[in-house]
Length: 470
Image (cartoon, rainbow, N blue to C red; front, top):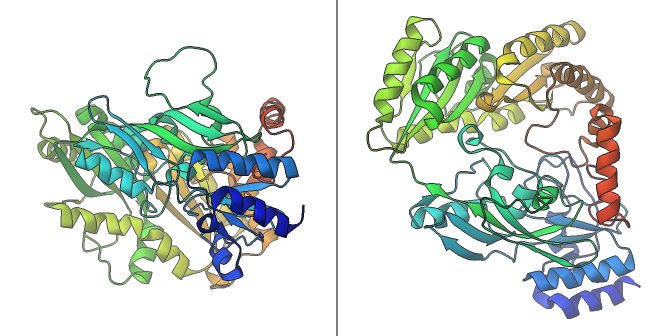
């Protein structure tokens, strides 16, 4: 079928408002968020309902044309970017943005894949409930992409990854069939739990079109504090100390290393250290109160005083109001921008168990310094759940990109250490194009056989996001 004939067939399904075919209109969909990957596509199809998605997939399946699903296009690994052949058709689900139902009694919300995360959070808040998934791109990231990449964020310590928040999924299979898996059950022991196949699959097994998610009671009180710590080991011990005192009321525990803090203040001069100096390291902590008789502020103050007495904590700044809390969060959230302004670096999104983080970082620091003495190790991230952004900065390169061969060598050095500590080379950002080869280097033969078997079973024609993940 020619592109003109395909255009006519797609128009018959989605109508003029559901098809983009002009170069300027398509351009924003062809580049990933970081600008690292750029592809080509003749059309961007924007269905408005699940039946249209099914009809589009059925058409493209019959033509053998590959499909790239795209949400808010906020991914960091090129998972939603087409290749450069011009054969892949982008299916953007942004028009499917309805919240189908919200049940505050059973703590459920069912929303379509194109719903922006921030909109779901606000809808839950208006109903007196909390949807806890929170990350920097929540103003543009869409549910379909978040589910397909199993997004993490800042509240994983208390509420888990996206996978832990999903109760049901509606998806369109590569054949064009609709799988109706939207169920709000907390317990369902009837065979394979099929929804988990689509969570984290990055669109390689089908298109997630809607999702049923867990809601939670809103906390009565939330305390935000930034605490200086002498080193990473003390930070991890402080986490356990706080959890011993406050249990799972500890919602967030974010780490900022000294180099990251220095970079932050140098390249974002509008920001100031809350301590009046640059700490050896610090953590951003949030503790919530869900019970009438649990005073979060008193608990945090008492716990930090005891931690200081045994050398686990130094200076601490507790936000007195939401404005001050937002200022502390701005420090943490501005690190990626500071890194970008600082220049070239090789980025890693890794995880190891928290108790091994200090030893892991010491080994990485030693090996990176020996192999690349003119580099800096920039460490920050979600230490509470063992997830770290560990980036190797090359100041002498300035703003020039890191050569591909150098990036590959640094990746292998760091990822070998991750593997030695039984960790993950992708804690929350996914695989996409960026880490596909790294994934297959580290996964076992059994892992590879199972993953390719599932892919072949569901998508024998390899039309769903080919070249990504598997």
